[in-house]
Amino acid sequence: MQSSLIRRAGRSKFPRSALPDGIGAVLRARRMSAGLSSTALAKAIGIRRETLQRIERGDGLPSTRVMFAIAKALDFEVKEMVCQSACKRAPF
Image 1: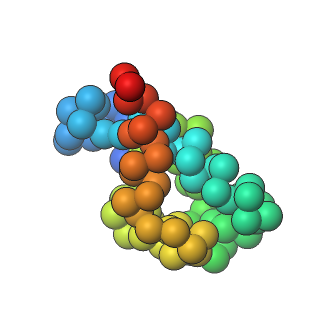
Image 2: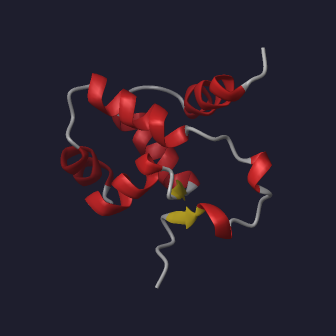
């Protein structure tokens, strides 16, 4: 059964090109710079560690609720997360 907290990247209702790549990498970098383990962050936002790790690997996309919870826990805005991941693939 698929968790409602994440969407598998290949099963999203949005076209893959419309979703920013690299969100997981941005989240992992933010988490690590905050000095948090994946277990600690997952517990703080109320999801399983495996779910957070799947998001960080890029195997799933966080729900809106999870994105906002992660941003709040790591003290940054969701738009920063999306912009940073989108800027990494920008052709300029």
